[in-house]
Image (tube, rainbow, N blue to C red; front, side, top):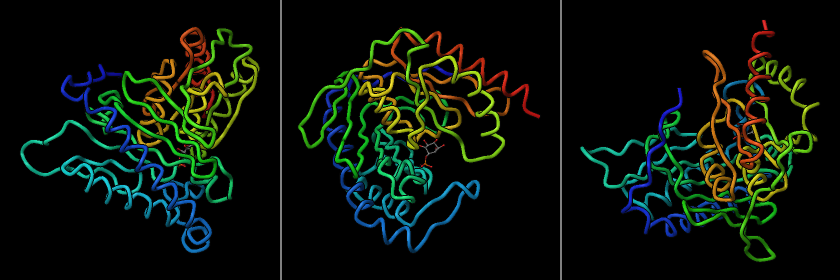
Length: 297
Ligand code: LIP
């Protein structure tokens, strides 16, 4: 069941540009660290998490430590939820701030491992509870790709922007309204049974769209929707840290972002698309996954 997402508290509005600046600063700083240390990180320590294909490098941990250390200085008293270390609960009767920082120290870890450039550091400030589906809302965030020097950023109500070597510019989604000519980004989970269903669903989805792209970073896929280099993005089973900043960046660029029911005991899916494409795409994706599930033993 999807819940009502929390509103942005009025007293927080004035602070949103500053939160966005902090997110940019953190994501760029961690990105530099991650890029500089790649050879060493890959050579020395690669472990696996949920499955043999779900990798974590020593740099995932170092990058998250860096983000946590810097946030503790810049935003003392605010909770941090990170991919590697989980959530830091703030002790005490009442938290001083409604903000939680949701960080992905390297999104696209497999690309990072193979020396492919599609990976990013994602940093988002959210309100509500990011550990509960539908109970949080991103209010400021940044996604930095240290290989390309591109930094996507947004705050609630402030539009989405890209900063790169050519300068800074506002972002906007495409105006594609027809599925047959829509370029769709997607991704796949790490578990074989999830992938089996995703592959079956794809048999139905692929012939219905212009083409599919699989970049390997959900955060960058959402930024790709925001920049109009794909029309839409859909994936089942991503985590809050993969999508918190990209969700806001895509929304501020004009996309509708929502989650859809993956079925009993299955993770939900995320969908980001220009409004004219949304209803038709949602029907295709959720229907295809539902049929794939019933066909998968
Ligand atoms: C990965 C994503 C990728 C998705 C994987 C995974 P990681 O995150 O961003 O696009 O398909 O399921 O969640 O593991 O590189 O942080």
